[in-house]
Each structure stands twice: as structure tokens, then as C-alpha cells.
Length: 267
Image (cartoon, rainbow, N blue to C red; front, side, top):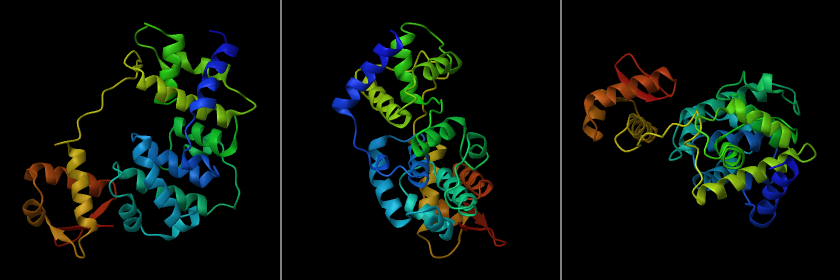
């Protein structure tokens, strides 16, 4: 399929079935950053209401910077992968300290907490409407489906030149929106990324350490005072070893602290 036909196929779907997502309205640097952090490893349908509530409560980097991490984690409750909330909060501190309206490069963005190459590219494309080249799961689905049919172990290195070749340089923001929506459609039709060299099946949430971590954090966010390890073992339905392991991770990541009495609380 040549570039012209490929673009026509993607835009034809988008023009008829494109999604009306809240972060596509007024795609400022702040709103794009919030959406990109929230969408990491989380479905769009789950993010929509969280994004609306979060950006209403914290409408700018400055507002986010002025809030405490505990307040941000409380607003994030239920969305999962709470490290993202901490990274977003830390990123807000960096950006709020810079001159208003500063335009970031990919090299500057990847130095900020929680922002990798893919996220940096997405931020540049969506916030600045510039033709950055990046890849994520929906984009990967589209290119594997159309250009690597029945080929195993397709690397991102093989896909990226095609993304660069086919990008709509006049409308990169809308082009990536179209790719994302078309990729979602292809997945609904049975397309998948199992032939990608980077494919890995997400582990089950139930009974996982992620579930224990999330439950502990949610519990402590609603406790007015620090609590002990025995208290948590009584209050939560998990083995002691799992609770201790989860606590150690949460403390190491700066999502909670342990006082000199051996009690735990959110930072």
C-alpha cells in the first residue's frame, strides 16, 4: 500500500468514526501531559472521567505544583499505576519553575520524570502540532496490520521509518489522532500485536503485587494517622510477605514513608 492510499484509508475511518475525547479539546501542554500519563497502560474508557475530574480540580501545572503528593494520589485513586501520579506531580514542579509558554524539545522532555521517548514524541505532536515520530500500541497495530501481514517478530525499528514516511506533516496532531482511532478499530476487529517483537502479555491484576500495592495505598490515603505492619496484616486480605514486599516498594518509590516507630503513612 502506498503512502497516499494508506493515509486515505486512515483518514476515511477517522472522518466517519473519530472519537470525541476530552483531551483533544484545547490540547495545551498541560492537558496533553495529563492525558499521556493517564493513558499509559490504561484504557481510554477508564481515563475519560478521571481526566475530566482531575483537570477540573487541577487546571494547570501551577495548580498541580501547589498541591501535595497525598492530594494528587487521592485524586488518582482507582486509576492504578500510582507511580504515574507521582511522576506527573514531579514533572509539574519542573515545568512550573520554567518561564510560561516554554516550548520543550524531546531531549528536554525525556529528562522529566515518567517521560520516555514515546511519550515525549506524543506530547510534541499533540501539544505543539509538530511532526514528531513516535510509536505506541495502537500505532503499532495499524502498521503491522497493513505493512507486515503474517510476519513474525516485527521490531519497532522496522516500523518507525514507515511512520516517518507516512506522517501528515501539515496536520501531525490530527494524523496521530486518526491513527490512534483507526488502531482501536482494528483491535476491535481482531487485529493484535502478538507478531511484534516487543509484545508481552499483561499479567493478571487479581492477586498480583500491583493489587496489594494499590489496596495498601488506598487504605493509607484514608487513614488519619500512620499505621503499623500488624495493623495492615489484620485489615487487608493478603499474606504478610506480600504486604511487606508491597510496602518496601512503595517506600522505595517515595509513595509512602515509614516513621521511627515502624508505622507507615502516605507522604
